[in-house]
Amino acid sequence: MPRWRPFYHLVWSTDGRRPLIAPSIEAAAHRELRAIADRCDILVHAIGGIEDHSHLVISIPPKLSVADAVQRLKGSSSHALRAEFGDAIKWQSEYSVDSFSERHLPTVIAYVENQRQHHQNKTLIASIEPD
Image (tube, rainbow, N blue to C red):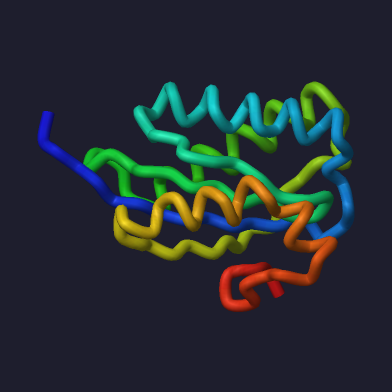
């Protein structure tokens, strides 16, 4: 296996930016995203978000493009969540991705894991939050 260390911060929103991710759905969504990532050999460093969008910090193996990884994560999680919670759960087709160096990993993880606090305290990084 080649050595690989790409780090990505992904963000995507619910359809229409509606607040569809209730706490019970959030736990299931995070569990499903981790399971999908595991099946695809994607390393999950952090998952976070609020009612209308999700953040992931991941490392994608060289066998997958970023677009393929996102398609698998979003598509499979959307399918699983709709099966469990009904048709109301759907992601927007767009997403945001930023790459960053390993030295920034702890900072990005902390930002993603503390999304609720950042939104409550208005300490968001506007350039990486959904519009």
